[in-house]
Length: 182
Image (cartoon, rainbow, N blue to C red; front, side):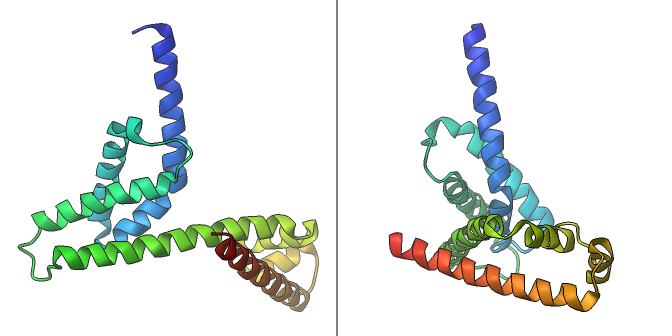
């Protein structure tokens, strides 16, 4: 292996890991929708990751990495359910496919909402964005947030309510526009 090949391998690994880490929560959510046991779901996520890495050369850059991973996870889950068919509750393969399709749709809708939220947060006034970050990203109570920004708790409640309404309207508008474009 030449130095150039080694550099390419490292670059591929870095790109794969970045894409995988961005998609990991969606993949786990998808798997959990079909496998309620967290330990089994985590094992399936690891199996999915390993399969994705082995097949990474089949992934087309520029396409939806999470959707590709969900397709691979779907087969991992089907294989898992075939193995555990001795349990009392067993879904047929067509039923599992329907559940997988519904979960995949919900997962992509969740991703669209998350993307819209990030965009809408960026549009907020800096003061409002800071208040949201203090309250929700720092996981502070409203009382702690009010103390930190030196405002009354009632004032913070009103501001948070106004900002949430603003974000909700912005998210709905973004999703509506995205739906019209698609």
